[in-house]
Amino acid sequence: MPDLITPTGIMVMVAVLAYLLGSIPFGLVITRALGLGDLRAIGSGNIGATNVLRTGNKRAAAATLILDAAKGAVAVLIARAAVGEDAAQLAGLAAFLGHLFPVWLGFRGGKGVATFLGTLIALAPPVGIACCATWAVTAALTRISSLSALVSAASASLWLVAFGEGRMLFLVVALTLLIYAKHRANIARIKAGTEPKIGAKPA
Image (cartoon, rainbow, N blue to C red; front, side):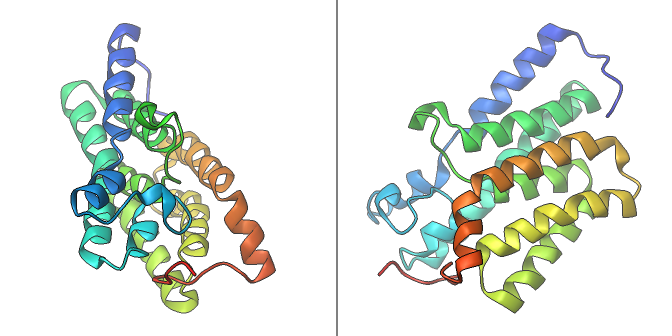
C-alpha cells in the first residue's frame, strides 16, 4: 500500500466522487438510447458489455466496454493528479464499488471486470495490459467471457509481483475477491458446463 498521507476529509471526498462516477450504468444508458430495450431483462440481466453484446449490437457492446473501463481509469488519474497515490488507489476501489453497487439501480450493478481492468491500466499500465492480454488469450481459447474474467483477475496478483508493483497488492486482492463473489453463479455454470459462449444470444 502507498503511504497514507492525505487528510481524511479529502479522502472521503475522493471516495464519494469516484463512487458516483463508477455508479453510472453506461450499458443501461446506451441500450436504452439505442432502443435496444431494458438490459436487465435481456440475457443474464447484467449491465456489462458481455450482456450488451447479447442484444446483437456490437458497437453498443464496445462502447459499454470502453466507458465501463474508463470509469475506473478516469477516477484513478484525476485522483492521482489532484491529490496523490494514496487517493488514486482509493478512487479505483470506490469507482469499482460504484459499478458493482450503483445507488441509481438499487445497488444492483455489474460484475466489474471492465472497470477492474481500466483501474489497473491507470494505476500500473504493464499490469493492466498483462491482465487484458490474459483475458484475451483465455477468451480466444474458451469463448467464455466469465471464465476469461476469472482467470484474468486471478492472474493480476501474479503480474503485480512480476512487474514489481507490490504496493497495489491489497487493492488488487480485494477487487479480485469481489469479482469472484459477483461471479458465483457463473462459476457454478462453468463447473456444470452450461455457461454460454461469447456472443450467444438468449434462448
